[in-house]
Image 1: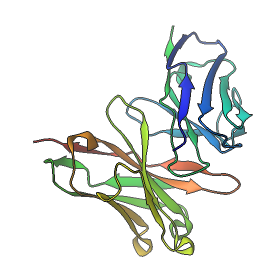
Image 2: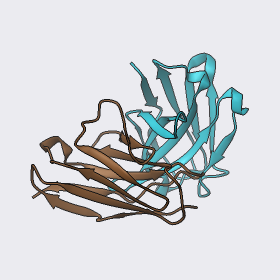
Image 3: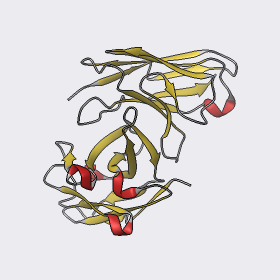
Length: 107
Length: 122
């Protein structure tokens, strides 16, 4: 199975800050990577797929990059509604594994 | 509106069984691969398994830890996917989500249902 490792596990930031979350795959997955946002008690929500394609309706302050094994999710200017947990997920091969999550908290 | 609604969760004893349902609306269910993902309280997301469309011969695949105990099926006439949970263990306690896999141009899960809670306890 492909292992997905996110860092950091948690991060504290303020409204207006720029935040970057990293995801590393245990083997190359080309661009088969998605990012999801999950708020407490809610289902995950798709943010980015294909490593860098923004899902329709997602604010442009979210962006993704990377290829192969190393990927990043960047939020350019944090808004209050962005405080949540973020997961990366590889869609290269079954089982479709997720990273352990990064909890973004208010400083 | 594209929507998935799960149901069927509840409290079950270890060794028991439960069948979850996922009703789809707002899209062509019969042409979609459907997946199940679970999340234990305070933990991350864990892929459970999938069922393909008729075009893919309704092919199924499961996570290794669930293979042989869980079965995914579907009824396209009812726009519904199912997850049969057998021989349940306390560690199967989780919220179970169904989600659609979109493949074009690249794979991703969207949308997700609201989830249904399965609690395995004596």
